[in-house]
Length: 182
Picture 1 (cartoon, rainbow, N blue to C red):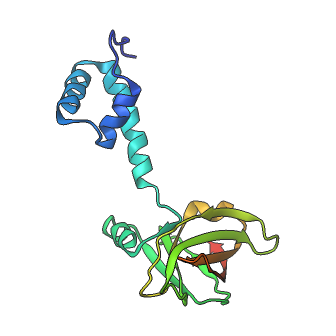
Picture 2 (cartoon, rainbow, N blue to C red):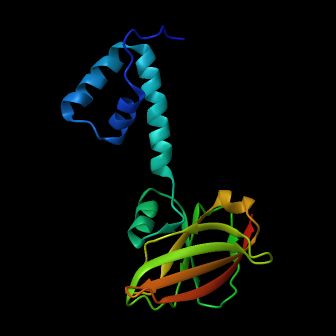
Picture 3 (cartoon, helix red, strand yellow):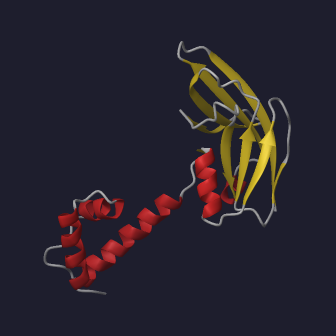
């Protein structure tokens, strides 16, 4: 264990440093101090690990650009196109890092906002809701990123996609996707 620092770098400053929010002179001062202070270097390393974990998180709804980024990072991404009202099983095998449910057949021509609710089919319990998600107006799609740790949720999932236009008129489209995790 390193001895305590007489003038430790403030935690907020370390967060700002790892977020890239400091001015160049401030960044240099943090680096210089951390290079000569084992205690602050250790704290900085912990903040860096947290920052990296947050950057690696994949949100539930993603854009096509985000999917391309996941593939570029080397993740094994599998597409699962699903049409409105269709019941389509999703087999999440061992060779899959992320499954992209492509919720298709949406008229998003005039959509101002799209929200997604994920429910349990049998009980209608809400697992989570995402508001103002990215959507592909041209292709009429919403992309949902499913990850292996979602296996803790009940397997029979219903996605509800609500699209609102500028005058707040709303349409709701449902997709039933039973999941199987291997």
